[in-house]
Length: 481
Image (cartoon, rainbow, N blue to C red; front, side, top):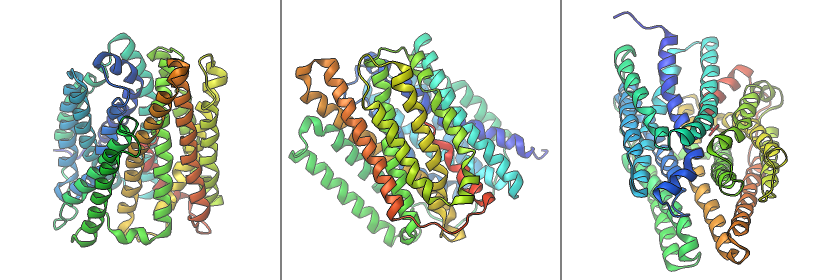
């Protein structure tokens, strides 16, 4: 069989990545409709997003290792088939438990698809200029997937029903699986002796899952109740077991020595705090737009449109700026701009207009995120030996997803707790007070990110522009949703 062109290979794996990004964004706008039709409780709806993020982030490093051990093509194809099947079953779900369980399976599938797809791009385009061009298109795929997801989610939910947000993956997934099996060349296994640290992945994900569950239930159980403290205690115990496992296992999922690099630790703290703020804020903002301002799903999708546009604009300009000024100034200022947007939405009320209430924040927040994302990747990989660059870049993406899952649970719990305590003001006003409190705490998260950059991050005197572009662009794949 004739060797396929590099750009045909790129198109196939880019579509696979597009599906991962699209599905996360497309779900967000459909959440209020899903809650109404499947009778989700107020504190359980977040699990539609959280389950996906938990299993995607928790098994992302494992998926990357699997691609090295079993072959990139095989790993991508397996993930694609599982992603397609879980999408079909999600669309057929009739209970919250079914939907949440299947969303976790979908996130697990994405954890094997995403690193395999990106690694195929990196080994296909080995020279600097062609690789940077491919990675530029990869960034556009990510931001385009987010934009399409927000718009398609609104249109599909309003005119076809929320289930078609997932059914749409099925024909695409079947066609893509056939094309990948037939066209993509089989890759040699990178490391035949590398083992999969499955216990490490299970311990890390289980620990975070219990933390998320404890925060989700805290408004019901009580923040100081025995149940809440018990779940948090077990979660910390599992985290300690994960650390012990990583220190002892021969080929750990996350070599602990990499955390001795100051910038790696600081950058992962910044990313976790930033995405904890963003995932929770956009979850709550979606509910606010449809529940308080009574926007339709289509108008909600349009309301978010400035976000991916602004993010894409900033992302493409950051490599030159970082090459000139270094990454630390942007890691300090970027989160502060995000905080300004969050403080703006914390003043929303039931009569807020889109143009004065939502639009300024929909520009400020992605402007700050776009200013932060590329520099935080550059910081996370600076000072890391070349043979551990892949681990460092994978770790920062894991921190993004895991921080987002934990942040969503904390912000949702705060919103629910304040709403319950303000119920005497009426349901609408009580909900608004809950949203306000969550947005303010979200602003504190990104404030912490800015302080971390100020006191922890160290920047080298100069970062070559081409190097900056190379480390940045692959990791923008999940930032837009």
